[in-house]
Image (cartoon, rainbow, N blue to C red; front, top):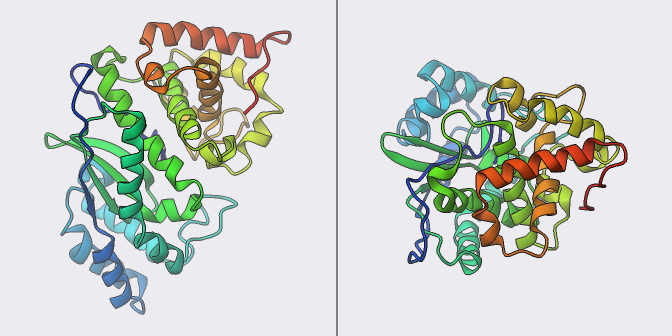
Length: 330
């Protein structure tokens, strides 16, 4: 996400050409959490400003791929984010309605997240047998910047997981679906390759990518309902079911845009005309469900973008029309 503050979660990782019939290859991963937990224990009584300074030297400097300037900006910005994180209730202003993160919740997930990801990846590869991964996965404390964030720099591909944000907005029940969501983004990029729109991503393609990954995560975890695979806001489905036609009308106005007007549909801190944050994820989920029910998941991953575009416009038009087709039930 698949989920970030001020950026679109799960940005596309392009691969030169679709892969067919490849031998499966899982992602490797590096777990930074043991080092962070040792640091957190040793500095628990240190004032926030001093703790942020210590974090810069003892954690950020040791793991430059995770705490890169490409993701966090320069040293001053990273240190400022660390200071806010170590201050009281760092999540309150960022995630309205979400209980602040406690050290106990973070520590509990820190001990589980790496092995859980490895187990989920094995299960994922049973469904997507041709999945090949050359992306390095890293688990660390994102300082409330993201839960999952693919990024490419220095000639390497990374999928960074923010264990702090995962612990804050996810539950133990939905974490497997969250991992499936992020792994599917890698698989989708693998098989669609250069067919995907190049350059700045138009809203219709982001709606499909994020909606499809959300739908796939629910198909792979049938015990989860739509809200559990959409995560945040926690009342997104309830609120949107009352205003789907209006949301579809507004999305149609932005569907071709690849600027801030198109991106805002997928952000956790921007509302489109009073609609809930991240409403584009829900519209995308409903669209993917309308396309995908009864079809193999690997087939959906290979849908040609021109087909996706035409179907997305048709789906939103029908949803927006007062007498049009009703949205599928989540």
